[in-house]
Image (spheres, rainbow, N blue to C red):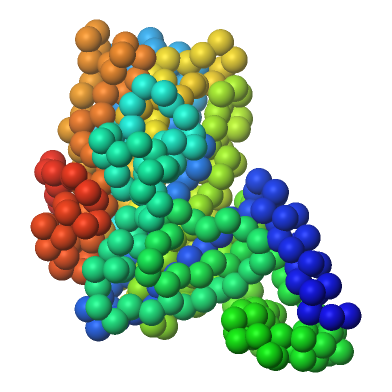
Amino acid sequence: MDRRSLLRGLTAMACSAAAHPLLSTVTLAKGAPALGENRLVVIILRGAMDGLDVLQPRGEAAFQALRPRFSAAPALALGDGFWQLHSALDGLLPLWQAGELAFVQACSTPYRDKRSHFDGQDMLEAGTGADVAPGALRDGWLNRMLQAVPGVSAETAYAVGLDELRVLSGAAEVRNWVPEQKLALSPQGRRLIEAVAHDDPLFREAIGDALALTAEAEAPEMAAANPAPKLAGDVAPLVDFVARHLRGETRIAAFSLTGWDTHRDQLKLLSRPLDRLQQALLRLKDQLGPPVWGRTAVLAMTEFGRTVRENGTQGTDHGTGGLMIAAGGAIKGGQVLGSWPGLGEGALFEDRDLMPTTDIRAWAAHALAGLYGLDRAVLEGAIFPGLRAEGASGLIL
């Protein structure tokens, strides 16, 4: 086998992986002195999570009339009971009670009207405003943050053939890992691929990283010391990889979870992605341990919310105002943040959606400022172009 044949085979593997809709990527950035000891994890919830079902305003007079089926389902009261949490997230109540879980209701990107998943995700991950067409700015806001911090280097988890996580793409060096893909080679195959790659520095480095990561992930002593329970969607390998690196020099991690597009049978279908998210957060806390979890903020963000009214197929359609979930020891939890617009007559956006009252980029900027001391001019100019970082405060300790 020559190198050209091997590359052709790897390209075929790449196409197969890229076509798989359920794969998740994780991207990490190694620490720099300027980042200190705080950690940030960004989870992109692809598909438009229904924030009004996750965190239900049952104290709102119009809620029951707008959502008769959803409002009759079991839920968990928070505080005085105005807000009630979806029952699939019952495992997160200890985080809420410990002040390590918070919500931002009625937030959104500046994206409006067309309600395209692709454009909405582009705007969310690029961190741009309405004056920039979706897709026009190719780098992501987390990558621009890394460009603004001196001394950052990439820490890599490597896989062949899945497109990058947009929020961390850009000029700052970052790489991707796909936990579902494994590079399983016999000793002879390993020697062959090392020999074929030897004279190509770029290929040699990538293959070396992949082989090292495979050996690390599959070490029997690691598996014995760190058993992974079967999670919904099997996110345990992803979470364990992130946690292992955050316990070291890594300071920034981002990954995505899918399955939030609930056009029909929402009462049944929403529970599964919520369970995935819940288990990911709980396992992340467990694997990080108190010292690191205490310096960590997790932001779970989605491209837009969903319609306030149930549709005819017992689901919801693409909307506008949505929900951000924040967790971690660096979060000032036990609270629902944001300005609640209400659901009464005249309060809805285009008479169908939850009215957005804060910009989700402002909350991300607030987190970056609180965790890493980034200056407002850098946040509003370089990281989130055109943002006026107002109306977001009180999320970070």
